[in-house]
Length: 394
Image 1 (cartoon, helix red, strand yellow):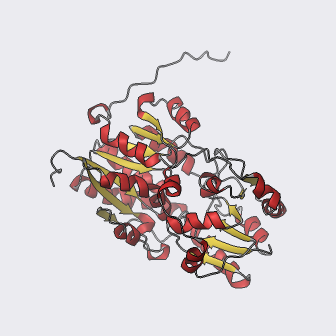
Image 2 (cartoon, one colour):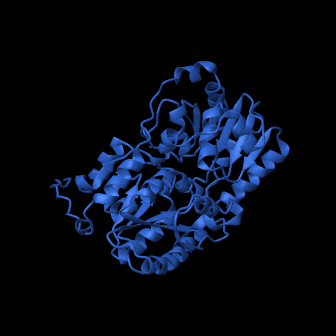
Image 3 (cartoon, helix red, strand yellow):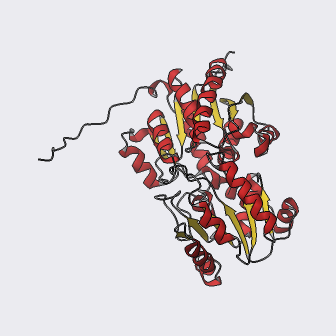
């Protein structure tokens, strides 16, 4: 297949609802650019009925899907995660050979992203990476993110601190761009649902106090659900409307889904959603009273609404956060106390007008501008990091 005359071929990898919501506006910018031939490669949970077959959303949005990579094992183990990477590599090797981009865009830190990065390296395809330089010590995501940073040739960071961290890892400064988190572009560019539209979409009436819960396996631990007992125990009897969203497809996620469904079956006013599109999810963040769990959206996106967030346990340890976040150890009483504090009118009032350290909703413009203008000839060969003499300890 030949490249369209004069156009730069840009490939984008998406694996799940979470990264697609972040990639939506960069995809829009690239799709509209007259000098770009865009190709989207879809894999993992996007193609799983159990997780909502979210590839349909990508197709409905009109983005050109070049390949569908079936790779997600129906497993609840770390071995299943490892094998998923291997299966994805096999599929992507053929797909990226058939439609070979001039540059491949990856995002964040999901373990599946190791597959396209590995294939791109072997095929000598330059890699651009979004959201490097961040920290989440309670998940293998931290190691994946750093590996992707070193494999990538162009970087788009969400914060200035993250940019400095990527440069400190030995990446040349000209390659590293502070863009902000692209998920925040929804706040500036998308039309959120009003409360009546949101309630109609969800099929429920929101009422105070309402709590959005998002809990994922803590993948750095041998038992990825070791912190779940305290979390579910704390939520079992709180006098609130409780709205759950499904976890990521990590080791232990199937057990968490079952536990969430059990809670919903025994607790009044508990609602569980497999998938919420980006607009619905953003609208929900705006209208609920508190968020609780260990999701990065409580750190990165919730601050834009001044939403109090109870961040539980170690999964997001080390990540930059705004003052709307209350950290609580994975202990029932600590979580309950943090929730009571988060629900106070005084705390919510104190967050009015706060700024979000992850940006102002202009990331997509920066990403598209760099991807369409960076010199491809200069990308593959990186300059070595200067060696600083280290005095050996005596």
